[in-house]
Length: 309
Image (tube, rainbow, N blue to C red):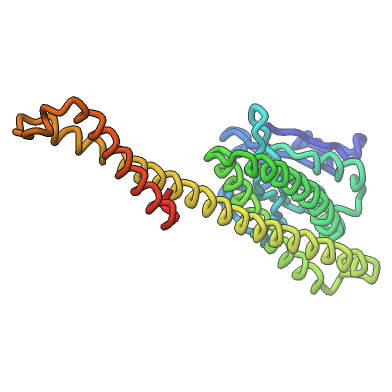
């Protein structure tokens, strides 16, 4: 999908019919849109596709007619009530008279930036745009991290009552999300440090960068802490489930052993074996039953004493 946010509606290039101050936004673009934008803005296709690569890490590249900033921003994907959290790259191409943003999915962060930064400053100082974008993305990271933590606490309460494979699978999905967030926050942290080293950064921008770095560090520590807690929780519940399974198997084995005693005795006496006076005794059946009960009780007491039942 292609959108154009026009900065100054009364300034339009007569050749390209595009506003001289422009913001073009590509979200999961088609091949036709990619070709069109690359031709109009003199961008190599490979450069544009970097912003559509899920594994692309945050970095900065400079070309003759533009500079490319790749950021990593968080997403919450709600599929039929099942939430999953991911981080995908957002590429911003800065030109002399406009910017081009490229991403795989739509994100409200763009609307927030549009309402706050649609001025000439974003063309003159890409670092201002970058600082604001990274700072705003951290707010979404922290919001999603708090949501993940709340979901983890709810799952823990359910698992205390009745642990299930589905709950553990959900916990593993949260663990994967936290790993994505940790890696992405580290990438954005490196990016903001590179921006901080620019010669053109003023005192006000430096103060803002320090605040963003503090928030980045906080979000990163939250992600690491939640991930560590989650790993310990999953390990604990896996041990509990394994222990419960071992207890069940031990109980079933003991019951099988107990049942096998009367079965063995009755099977032996039920053969065509001459038993003499015992076979003709009217109380022989009662004696056999008492013998089975006695041996079974003795075996039960032995298993109880060894904590096998």
